[in-house]
Image 1 (cartoon, rainbow, N blue to C red):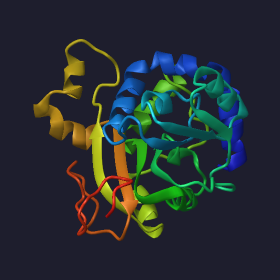
Image 2: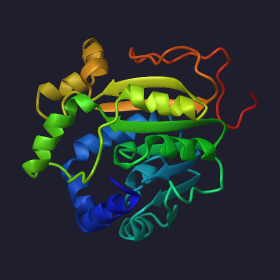
Image 3: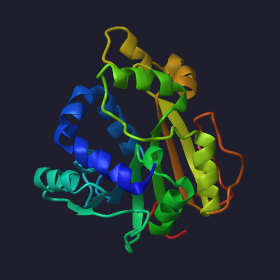
Image 4: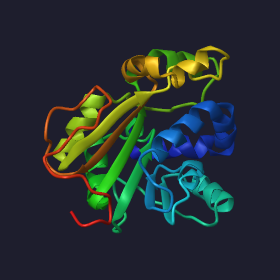
Length: 248
């Protein structure tokens, strides 16, 4: 897996990218909701691997910037969301010099050849007091997702490595980040009558945290306070929490 092969893959699927997302809109709506739980409307946001820009646009940022390896993806994003800024940029070799209070990376770290380098680049772009939101698929779902792809039921992934929560947290720690919170959600990836209630029912919260497809880790600058949490509760630091832009 290399940066060039990843870029070629997403350039190839760009013409059908929005069709795939529409086909899986129930899943992507859940992803958008998960990000919005962390990133308030009206924020200044960078999305890494923005695709055609729909997740970034759903956050209604005051200043939204999206970067992607694929020129075709960026062209489509700029046409769909002219109120936002998009540019072709390789996070690994040419990270932006700007700093952002919120950085979002959805289904990105699975596709990078060097996880440490990817997380370090995002950490370098994160403003003091800012939050990095990393969303990935729960690796336990890997075999199911691969079968779905072979059956033409989901978007082709290209070369990828399913990243565990522990691997992402370890890479973040090496970049000077600590985990602020961790949660899994989304047990039923299709809007199936009756079963889809498992995605929201309070009593199913423990099942979602253990088996949910969507896993969301949120990081901030600072040394780790304790081992990564698998409970879904925030990982508390020894410093008082504050929102980006506020004085510590």
